[in-house]
Image (cartoon, rainbow, N blue to C red):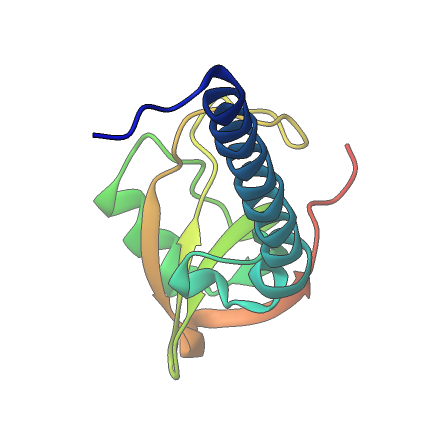
Length: 133
């Protein structure tokens, strides 16, 4: 049976600590590269990117439909700041502001989500970042 000397134990301990430090640093580096290079180009529908905001004008038919579906939203024809959650081939999934929320105020709650057919959207201006209040 071989016995390890104190010097060998010290060397193994230092190597284990150095290996741990190098592993943590390498993981941090590659995580940082992912956040900077990969995450921004992943579509928001797949959990990446940044929220997309828009100014939108809806048809009278859509405003009437929204009022009948949910009374907690501000059912009006134009919205200055709407979060576009998803854009399909013929519809948008929109997060609309709740009633009582003044324009330009950020709400920390999840907004009501509605599927709005593109044919009921008169005008939409998509922005990459939220507008400044």
